[in-house]
Amino acid sequence: MNNWKSKNRHKFLLQYHLIFVCKYRKKLLSNKNISDDIKQFSYEICNKHNVIIHEMETDKDHIHYMIETEPNINLSNLVRMMKSYTTYHIWKFHEEYLSKHFWKENTFWTDGYFICSIGNVSEKQLRKYIENQG
Image 1 (tube, rainbow, N blue to C red):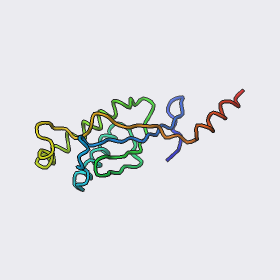
Image 2: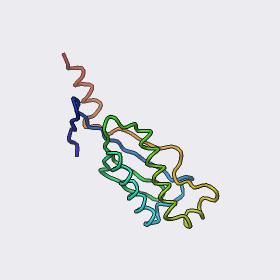
Image 3: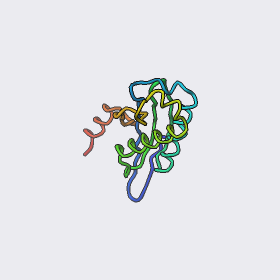
Image 4: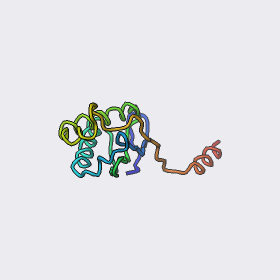
């Protein structure tokens, strides 16, 4: 972890903290089977798109990811793929349980999400480095 990647003529290290929240803040991830399946489906979709999950953990109503991507990855598309893939498959395996929580809709996550980059240096250190160039 924290090793620069090289591809063609560029170097990069793109890491993010990502959070998805269950629709209506329902405590669906308290169910160990659902929580474990969501983690498995997350690994599947991320592996398929060359996204590395360094850390992943669920709380009662949300999941945290620490991911690493390549520069060609569009983050909003990645989020859409992860949410739709996990939702589709979780309904496939837990329809009876989920239909008690969501009457007419096959949903699982809220529309929004949280994402922020994870840097290797503080903002102060970066500013000082840039100011001292030249």
